[in-house]
Structure formats: C-alpha cells, structure tokens
Image (tube, rainbow, N blue to C red; front, side, top):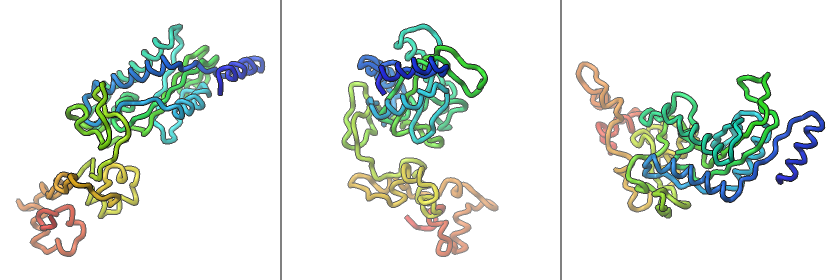
Length: 298
C-alpha cells in the first residue's frame, strides 16, 4: 500500500472514530542505515559462518502488512521477527538505533553453551548466522495496543517490525559457529569487507549438529518424525544428499561409541562392552550407532 493511500485510510479512519496506522517511508538511506547496524552487530560475534544480511522488499512488505494492525504481537508464521515501539519524539534514525540497541541488549540473557536465552531473545535473531535477508517497516499508530495491558490504548506510537529469512532461534543449536570470520562460509560465498559470508552458497552434505548422534536418530526414525530439525542439521545422516569430495566421512561421523553409553558402567564394566559380550551387537539395531566402535561397525 502506498504512503498516500495509507494516509487517506488514516484520515477516513479518524473520521469514523477508528485509528489506522500510516506508513513511515523506509528511504534508501534508512535501509542502508539499518542494514549497516545489523551487520555491525553480526560482525561483533566473530562467527565463522555468519552471513551478511541483504535487504529484501518482500519481507519489508510482509512486515508492513503485519504491523499496520498497531498491536504488539508476533505473527509466528515462518519468519524471524523483531518488533519494537516507542512514543518518544525523535528522528527515525534515533528510534531505530534505540530499538536495535534494546534488541541487542538481550545478549545478557544469552548463553552460547546452552544454545538458548533465559528470557526474550531478539538478540539471537539479530545474529543468527544462517539468516541472510531482512526487510523492515515502520508505521505511526494514532492508538497502539499491547497484550499485557489490553484495556489501555497508547497514543501516537512509532512501531517497527523487521522480518528475517531464514528464521532463527531454533533452540538447541548454536546460532553461529565459533572460529575465524568466514572460515565456514558455504561453497560459492565470498568474504565481504565486513568479514561476513556474502551471497548464496551450496549447503554441504554434512551433519552439522550432534554429529555422532545423526545416524542414531536416523535409525530411530527421527528424519521422518522430526524433519524440521533433522533435514537441516543431519542432512547426511538422513540420506538427503551425497557427500562431495572433501566432505570426509571421519569428519562428520567419528568412529566412537555415543558418549552416554561409552561412559555408562555396570560393576565396573562399560555398557557397550557388556552388550558386545552378550552378542547383542548382531541382534540389536540400536547398537549400530550407540556402540558402533565397540561392536566394530566402523
């Protein structure tokens, strides 16, 4: 919807006693401003696979359509989302900066080793390595509503929404890989001046997360029952692709018993060794991955 059409709707809405949002134009300068802020925050994480964000007009339009409701709530339909509102009288640059600084400040709730946040996590979507596109929109709301105080209408609120693709915040996985910048860019990507992975790349045929567990999960049927996770992080384990030369088997599937069972003991003897002696390696499919070293499957 054009700015003039939104203004007309706002005027007609006021005449009818209904408050309607009107768009605040995202000029080329503001697009560059918010992209630079995003990529500077991403650069700070020193991620080995951190993508450089690019502007996407489709995401920007989706964000505009959503925030025009003037209600502070997330859409939750497959996009990464960061939202903020403000009632201060300030420039768009100042309001954008305040919003993004607030999002980034949630780093205090983020624990890399735990792969999660203890509270809201706009921060992790800001710096989610696999995300490579962002589109934002801003509106002015004559009245604004928040779910935690539904009986109160906040007057003259500035409201911003940024949508991201691919979405982040898949809890239980690392938001970025640690290492030298650009060390794990995808094949076909280049390293930008920001030291971020730039452009489209080819996803390698590897198991990214919990490498020694992917084959076990495959045997347990997780590729079909949990495709959202498995098809993304266990592509090789789920037989979704064929490894290219250089994607070494040992690098992705180490010849080790699963750590849980490699350490489990009964009367001083390791569990995998007990099962091997009881000849369960030949009869129990579970041991093909749980005790693959002890049972001689690798």
